[in-house]
Length: 283
Image 1: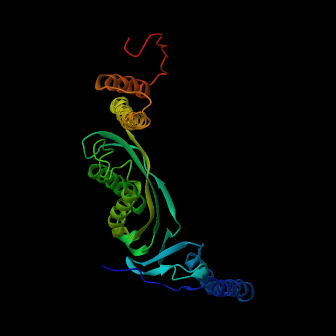
Image 2: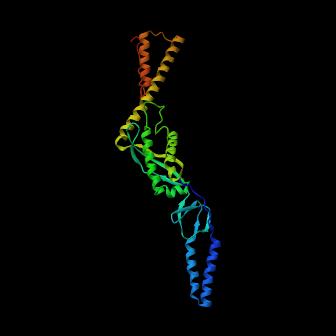
Image 3: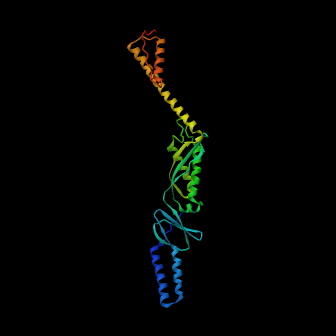
Protein backbone atom coordinates (compact mmCIF):
# COMPACT_ATOMS: atom_id res chain seq x y z
CA UNK A 1 0.00 0.00 0.00
CA UNK A 2 1.35 3.38 -1.01
CA UNK A 3 1.64 6.15 1.57
CA UNK A 4 1.61 9.92 1.44
CA UNK A 5 4.72 11.48 -0.12
CA UNK A 6 5.63 15.14 0.51
CA UNK A 7 6.12 17.20 -2.64
CA UNK A 8 7.80 20.60 -2.80
CA UNK A 9 6.66 22.52 -5.88
CA UNK A 10 8.44 25.46 -7.47
CA UNK A 11 7.78 29.00 -6.28
CA UNK A 12 4.87 30.51 -8.13
CA UNK A 13 6.27 34.05 -8.04
CA UNK A 14 9.46 33.14 -9.93
CA UNK A 15 7.56 31.20 -12.58
CA UNK A 16 5.02 34.02 -12.85
CA UNK A 17 7.84 36.44 -13.62
CA UNK A 18 9.17 34.08 -16.29
CA UNK A 19 5.68 33.73 -17.77
CA UNK A 20 5.30 37.51 -18.05
CA UNK A 21 8.75 37.79 -19.64
CA UNK A 22 7.71 35.24 -22.25
CA UNK A 23 4.49 37.15 -22.85
CA UNK A 24 6.38 40.46 -23.16
CA UNK A 25 8.89 38.89 -25.53
CA UNK A 26 6.07 37.64 -27.73
CA UNK A 27 4.42 41.06 -27.84
CA UNK A 28 7.72 42.83 -28.58
CA UNK A 29 8.70 40.30 -31.26
CA UNK A 30 5.42 40.64 -33.09
CA UNK A 31 5.46 44.44 -32.82
CA UNK A 32 9.04 44.84 -34.04
CA UNK A 33 9.66 42.04 -36.50
CA UNK A 34 6.08 41.12 -37.50
CA UNK A 35 7.31 37.52 -37.43
CA UNK A 36 4.35 35.17 -36.75
CA UNK A 37 6.66 32.64 -35.08
CA UNK A 38 6.67 34.86 -32.00
CA UNK A 39 3.07 33.71 -31.56
CA UNK A 40 4.54 30.48 -30.14
CA UNK A 41 5.52 32.49 -27.07
CA UNK A 42 1.84 33.31 -26.50
CA UNK A 43 1.00 29.61 -26.70
CA UNK A 44 3.79 28.87 -24.19
CA UNK A 45 2.45 31.57 -21.89
CA UNK A 46 -1.04 30.11 -21.97
CA UNK A 47 0.40 26.62 -21.43
CA UNK A 48 2.13 27.74 -18.22
CA UNK A 49 -0.95 29.32 -16.61
CA UNK A 50 -2.69 26.07 -15.45
CA UNK A 51 0.44 25.18 -13.47
CA UNK A 52 -0.12 27.94 -10.91
CA UNK A 53 -2.01 27.17 -7.71
CA UNK A 54 -2.37 28.39 -4.12
CA UNK A 55 -2.30 26.28 -0.95
CA UNK A 56 -4.26 27.86 1.89
CA UNK A 57 -3.51 27.17 5.60
CA UNK A 58 -4.64 23.67 6.59
CA UNK A 59 -5.21 22.73 2.97
CA UNK A 60 -3.31 20.41 0.66
CA UNK A 61 -3.06 19.50 -3.01
CA UNK A 62 -2.63 15.91 -4.16
CA UNK A 63 -0.59 15.99 -7.40
CA UNK A 64 -1.28 13.38 -10.08
CA UNK A 65 0.54 13.07 -13.40
CA UNK A 66 -1.51 11.03 -15.89
CA UNK A 67 -2.71 8.66 -13.16
CA UNK A 68 0.64 8.51 -11.35
CA UNK A 69 0.67 9.90 -7.81
CA UNK A 70 3.62 12.28 -7.49
CA UNK A 71 3.11 13.64 -3.97
CA UNK A 72 1.15 16.00 -1.75
CA UNK A 73 1.87 19.72 -1.38
CA UNK A 74 1.03 20.86 2.16
CA UNK A 75 3.21 23.96 2.45
CA UNK A 76 1.23 27.19 2.32
CA UNK A 77 1.87 29.66 -0.48
CA UNK A 78 1.79 30.33 -4.21
CA UNK A 79 3.36 27.58 -6.36
CA UNK A 80 3.81 26.26 -9.86
CA UNK A 81 4.02 22.67 -11.11
CA UNK A 82 3.90 20.89 -14.44
CA UNK A 83 0.68 22.08 -16.13
CA UNK A 84 -0.19 18.46 -16.89
CA UNK A 85 -0.44 17.71 -13.17
CA UNK A 86 -3.93 17.18 -11.77
CA UNK A 87 -4.23 19.07 -8.50
CA UNK A 88 -6.82 17.52 -6.15
CA UNK A 89 -7.68 19.69 -3.16
CA UNK A 90 -8.05 17.98 0.24
CA UNK A 91 -8.77 19.92 3.42
CA UNK A 92 -6.65 19.20 6.50
CA UNK A 93 -8.95 21.16 8.81
CA UNK A 94 -10.96 19.59 11.61
CA UNK A 95 -14.50 18.67 10.58
CA UNK A 96 -17.48 18.46 12.91
CA UNK A 97 -20.09 15.83 12.03
CA UNK A 98 -23.39 15.52 13.91
CA UNK A 99 -25.02 12.30 12.78
CA UNK A 100 -28.73 11.81 12.34
CA UNK A 101 -30.73 10.14 15.07
CA UNK A 102 -31.06 6.48 14.18
CA UNK A 103 -33.40 3.93 15.71
CA UNK A 104 -31.57 0.79 16.82
CA UNK A 105 -31.98 -1.96 19.39
CA UNK A 106 -29.79 -1.97 22.47
CA UNK A 107 -28.26 -5.06 24.05
CA UNK A 108 -31.57 -6.00 25.66
CA UNK A 109 -33.53 -5.50 22.45
CA UNK A 110 -35.15 -2.21 23.46
CA UNK A 111 -35.57 0.27 20.58
CA UNK A 112 -33.64 3.49 21.23
CA UNK A 113 -32.80 6.71 19.39
CA UNK A 114 -29.11 7.60 19.30
CA UNK A 115 -26.79 10.01 17.50
CA UNK A 116 -23.10 10.89 17.81
CA UNK A 117 -20.95 13.98 17.43
CA UNK A 118 -17.68 13.27 15.62
CA UNK A 119 -14.68 15.57 15.21
CA UNK A 120 -12.27 14.31 12.54
CA UNK A 121 -9.58 15.42 10.11
CA UNK A 122 -7.61 13.97 7.21
CA UNK A 123 -4.20 12.71 8.29
CA UNK A 124 -3.08 10.70 5.22
CA UNK A 125 -4.01 12.48 1.99
CA UNK A 126 -3.06 9.53 -0.24
CA UNK A 127 -5.51 7.19 1.52
CA UNK A 128 -8.24 9.84 1.57
CA UNK A 129 -7.82 10.46 -2.14
CA UNK A 130 -7.33 6.92 -3.48
CA UNK A 131 -8.29 4.26 -0.92
CA UNK A 132 -11.98 5.27 -0.81
CA UNK A 133 -14.29 6.76 -3.40
CA UNK A 134 -15.51 9.73 -1.32
CA UNK A 135 -13.93 10.12 2.09
CA UNK A 136 -16.62 12.47 3.46
CA UNK A 137 -19.37 10.01 2.52
CA UNK A 138 -17.22 7.21 3.92
CA UNK A 139 -17.12 9.00 7.30
CA UNK A 140 -20.93 9.29 7.41
CA UNK A 141 -21.56 5.66 6.52
CA UNK A 142 -18.95 4.24 8.89
CA UNK A 143 -20.15 6.47 11.73
CA UNK A 144 -23.65 5.11 11.30
CA UNK A 145 -22.32 1.54 11.33
CA UNK A 146 -20.24 2.21 14.46
CA UNK A 147 -23.26 3.69 16.27
CA UNK A 148 -25.37 0.63 15.51
CA UNK A 149 -22.65 -1.71 16.73
CA UNK A 150 -22.18 0.35 19.91
CA UNK A 151 -25.91 0.30 20.69
CA UNK A 152 -26.01 -3.48 20.27
CA UNK A 153 -23.07 -3.86 22.67
CA UNK A 154 -24.54 -1.99 25.67
CA UNK A 155 -27.95 -1.78 27.28
CA UNK A 156 -29.59 1.63 27.49
CA UNK A 157 -30.07 1.19 31.22
CA UNK A 158 -30.01 -1.65 33.76
CA UNK A 159 -32.46 -1.43 36.62
CA UNK A 160 -31.14 -4.48 38.45
CA UNK A 161 -27.33 -4.31 38.32
CA UNK A 162 -25.83 -0.88 38.93
CA UNK A 163 -22.29 -2.17 38.34
CA UNK A 164 -22.90 -2.95 34.65
CA UNK A 165 -21.81 -0.29 32.15
CA UNK A 166 -24.75 1.09 30.20
CA UNK A 167 -25.21 3.74 27.51
CA UNK A 168 -26.82 6.11 30.01
CA UNK A 169 -24.57 5.66 33.03
CA UNK A 170 -21.19 4.77 31.50
CA UNK A 171 -20.69 7.71 29.15
CA UNK A 172 -16.90 7.89 29.61
CA UNK A 173 -16.34 4.20 28.87
CA UNK A 174 -18.89 4.18 26.04
CA UNK A 175 -17.38 7.24 24.35
CA UNK A 176 -13.91 5.68 24.65
CA UNK A 177 -15.13 2.51 22.92
CA UNK A 178 -16.85 4.62 20.26
CA UNK A 179 -13.62 6.50 19.51
CA UNK A 180 -11.70 3.24 19.23
CA UNK A 181 -14.28 1.70 16.90
CA UNK A 182 -14.37 4.77 14.65
CA UNK A 183 -10.58 5.11 14.59
CA UNK A 184 -10.28 1.53 13.39
CA UNK A 185 -12.96 1.95 10.74
CA UNK A 186 -11.73 5.31 9.39
CA UNK A 187 -8.02 4.44 9.35
CA UNK A 188 -8.43 2.93 5.88
CA UNK A 189 -9.29 6.42 4.57
CA UNK A 190 -6.38 8.10 6.38
CA UNK A 191 -8.74 9.89 8.77
CA UNK A 192 -7.89 10.71 12.38
CA UNK A 193 -10.65 10.74 14.99
CA UNK A 194 -10.14 13.70 17.32
CA UNK A 195 -13.24 13.19 19.44
CA UNK A 196 -16.36 11.04 19.34
CA UNK A 197 -19.20 11.12 21.85
CA UNK A 198 -22.90 10.38 22.08
CA UNK A 199 -24.89 13.50 21.23
CA UNK A 200 -28.43 12.22 21.77
CA UNK A 201 -29.78 9.19 23.60
CA UNK A 202 -33.39 8.29 24.40
CA UNK A 203 -35.85 5.45 24.23
CA UNK A 204 -37.91 5.21 21.06
CA UNK A 205 -41.36 6.78 21.23
CA UNK A 206 -43.23 3.47 21.34
CA UNK A 207 -41.66 2.46 24.68
CA UNK A 208 -40.58 5.81 26.12
CA UNK A 209 -43.69 6.18 28.31
CA UNK A 210 -43.46 2.66 29.72
CA UNK A 211 -39.74 2.99 30.44
CA UNK A 212 -40.32 6.34 32.17
CA UNK A 213 -42.88 4.70 34.45
CA UNK A 214 -40.42 1.94 35.18
CA UNK A 215 -37.69 4.43 36.07
CA UNK A 216 -40.08 6.32 38.33
CA UNK A 217 -41.18 3.10 40.02
CA UNK A 218 -37.57 2.10 40.61
CA UNK A 219 -36.81 5.50 42.10
CA UNK A 220 -39.87 5.34 44.37
CA UNK A 221 -38.97 1.85 45.60
CA UNK A 222 -35.39 2.95 46.33
CA UNK A 223 -36.64 6.02 48.20
CA UNK A 224 -39.12 3.95 50.23
CA UNK A 225 -36.41 1.48 51.10
CA UNK A 226 -34.27 4.28 52.51
CA UNK A 227 -37.24 5.67 54.45
CA UNK A 228 -38.05 2.31 55.99
CA UNK A 229 -34.41 1.69 56.83
CA UNK A 230 -34.21 5.06 58.59
CA UNK A 231 -37.54 4.56 60.36
CA UNK A 232 -36.45 1.19 61.77
CA UNK A 233 -33.33 2.80 63.17
CA UNK A 234 -35.32 5.64 64.74
CA UNK A 235 -37.82 3.22 66.35
CA UNK A 236 -35.00 1.08 67.66
CA UNK A 237 -33.28 4.14 69.12
CA UNK A 238 -36.54 5.35 70.72
CA UNK A 239 -37.19 2.02 72.44
CA UNK A 240 -33.62 1.87 73.72
CA UNK A 241 -33.86 5.41 75.16
CA UNK A 242 -37.21 4.69 76.83
CA UNK A 243 -35.87 1.51 78.34
CA UNK A 244 -32.59 3.10 79.45
CA UNK A 245 -34.21 6.09 81.16
CA UNK A 246 -37.11 3.98 82.48
CA UNK A 247 -39.61 6.65 81.45
CA UNK A 248 -42.37 4.08 80.96
CA UNK A 249 -42.61 0.35 81.42
CA UNK A 250 -43.75 -1.28 78.21
CA UNK A 251 -44.64 -4.93 77.82
CA UNK A 252 -44.31 -6.74 74.48
CA UNK A 253 -47.86 -5.91 73.40
CA UNK A 254 -47.38 -2.18 74.09
CA UNK A 255 -44.00 -2.23 72.35
CA UNK A 256 -45.63 -3.78 69.28
CA UNK A 257 -48.33 -1.12 69.25
CA UNK A 258 -45.76 1.65 69.68
CA UNK A 259 -43.60 0.27 66.88
CA UNK A 260 -46.62 0.03 64.60
CA UNK A 261 -47.64 3.62 65.31
CA UNK A 262 -44.13 5.00 64.85
CA UNK A 263 -43.62 3.12 61.58
CA UNK A 264 -46.90 4.48 60.22
CA UNK A 265 -45.94 8.04 61.18
CA UNK A 266 -42.37 7.85 59.90
CA UNK A 267 -43.07 5.99 56.65
CA UNK A 268 -46.24 7.83 55.65
CA UNK A 269 -46.00 10.31 52.76
CA UNK A 270 -48.48 12.60 54.55
CA UNK A 271 -48.36 14.40 57.87
CA UNK A 272 -49.82 12.40 60.80
CA UNK A 273 -52.95 13.69 62.55
CA UNK A 274 -52.43 13.71 66.34
CA UNK A 275 -54.99 11.96 68.58
CA UNK A 276 -55.24 12.95 72.25
CA UNK A 277 -55.80 10.01 74.61
CA UNK A 278 -57.98 11.23 77.50
CA UNK A 279 -57.93 7.90 79.30
CA UNK A 280 -55.04 5.71 80.36
CA UNK A 281 -52.51 3.74 78.40
CA UNK A 282 -54.68 0.66 78.83
CA UNK A 283 -57.78 2.24 77.23
